[in-house]
Length: 316
Image (cartoon, rainbow, N blue to C red; front, side, top):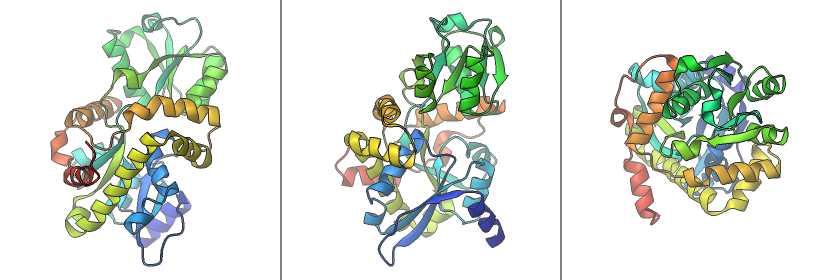
């Protein structure tokens, strides 16, 4: 296990700040530094983990299976995603959702100037990353707009920059992009046709998860971590300038792009997930895998801590 964890650290980037001596070390994994995880970074920047007696290390682990393996093996204590670990949960892995960070998808549908409405995509090529959120997200969006899968052609293009390049070359007409790639594309002459957050207003996109074993053995730590994340979500929502500063500093975004991204996600900042929102995220994940959810959301949700924290903080 130790050898595996060393490999994990070598393959990842770790972000942490000095804390008080005696603080309890906790490690949380996220796939990449983007706006979906902004509250966790705000909590780090504003010392909210420190205020809970936690020395938090945020570790970038791009591979969901590796992050799950590290969580189950105890090398990390928390995962900041919701969807990517669902396949492991469906297969019986002991992973529990505790709280939410962003409760709507952060993608925008970026299109070439000639596309005026979603129905214009019929017969066109759309860039996606097969097996990922852009694939399931675009399929869900087209379904809402009654466009059959056979009416469009998907082109597998992993990564945001390659998708923008493909649009410039005329290979594709549209792609789902997350900040700051969406803003960069708009500045390159493309346009935002749809913000998915306006369509799917209750989708548990990112959050906080731990093992049931940790919850049973160290509920005090779990509640402190939940409280730090909840405070991070609330601070991100209530103090836009701090959130934008954090995006510029930690997410390496230009200020204009950070401001645009913040305006898109502010309404989605809610620390308490709903069953419906988790179920929708599960459907997205299942679509990406070509399968169906194998468990109900309530079977892997434990909202005791987040509800207690919200009551203690006087939040509704």
